[in-house]
Length: 278
Image 1 (cartoon, rainbow, N blue to C red):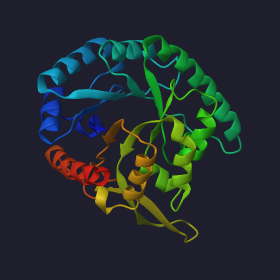
Image 2 (cartoon, one colour):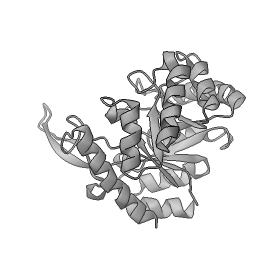
Image 3 (cartoon, rainbow, N blue to C red):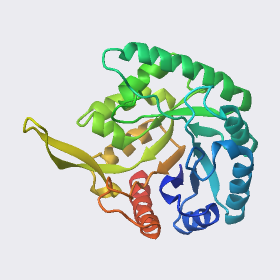
């Protein structure tokens, strides 16, 4: 496996700093944001990725993957992004998200997503790029492994990948749903994103019903069963990229960390996860 740090929460740092700090903390490279607000902007994909690639080579780290907002061939600058990734050796991209709405039309929405994905596969195949669909939680169409399976089931795993995420899969399938979902998408698993969470009380609704929200915590402290997840990855003989998401800024984190603190915590998380893999 190779380990990358998702650069989303390091947007306050220039790519030169990010590459140097990631290398210092023991990572192999970056999960680079190539989307609005990211380290590389879609409208500047070619020049921005050229610069990031040059910096990464200087610091002896890799751009292991790129996280994009592409949801279809009509997404802004989709072809430019894919072509630029191919040119600079970034062979896997995370796609953007299809929203689930409204209730009562899920099967229709899945069919729409499959048609969009089919178009994207044709585009990425031209450039030798594999698009990957991130398993998420909440009002996202690729919710949990089971629904992602319905999206991917007729596509060749060489042409499109599943981006497994034990935190989101546990949020939606707490006891065994995450495991069954991973079982279903196993042939497509091409990327893994790692973070962890706990449920925290979040007041009550107008009926007096208790509410809860998920809060990001260090990998060893959360409710997603990472040792069991890693054991399943071993059974699948997974040896691809693992992206640590390190969502430790803002109100959804156990504590809102500064960038240096986030990097230090990421190093602790990396050591923990590598220990599970050994």
